[in-house]
Length: 299
Image 1 (cartoon, helix red, strand yellow):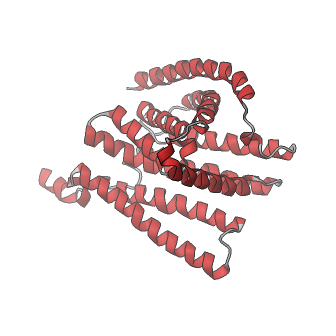
Image 2 (cartoon, rainbow, N blue to C red):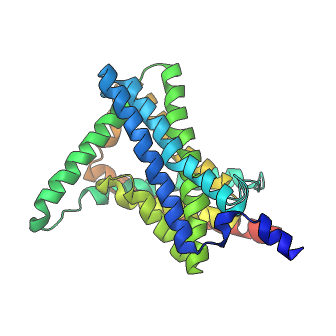
Image 3 (tube, helix red, strand yellow):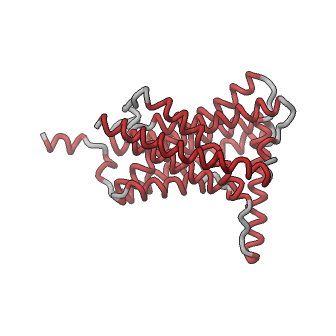
């Protein structure tokens, strides 16, 4: 019987964790190269690289090709099923979802404060050229984001929710919390190390230095949700809420004649936001504690 099980095990299951990590990253890079070549061909052929529909196509394909497909293939090759490695077959308790909604609301002021502080970071003078390059990349990313989010119609809003909330929450979570984090946890035998390293990579891969710290915190929060609930679906839900709330705020505030709402955070606004952020930290503490106790009762 044992001999039969060994023969039927997925081929890559016997590889070392280091080789499995190399496999996961290699598949992601290879698929990204193929996708980039395909998108470049379309962009050059139709001269539409700055068109809103082309940018949305890039968003859609990159989410699937760079994150979701490598995670699913990795799970199949290492664990024998497309969904098993990420624990997507485990459905969390329904009572956990309202708690995650509360946590996602509580974390918004904290992320806003960290984002403001991140904007104030200045590199030493000898890194001036690097800082200029990073700011140019940040401005380019923000321009693309605003172009995609500046919409006045409900159909366009629903499309943005699909491309910028639903797709990233599923695809990125399957890759980072569903594949990379558990692999690093098995390799290092340290769950906290795996969560924070995954959060670091999650933030760094977005190539937005002036949003690095809040995204790093968000990645750690999603990582702990995965750890506490043993299911990918609560991190997916929390990621969707974070992106979705932002999109809805931009849509409704923009319709009221203030589309650059998030670029107008001043020191005065920060002073008013700090007490809310402190209160939110208390809410996060009790919400996380409640979630953890619910999971303990299940086990």
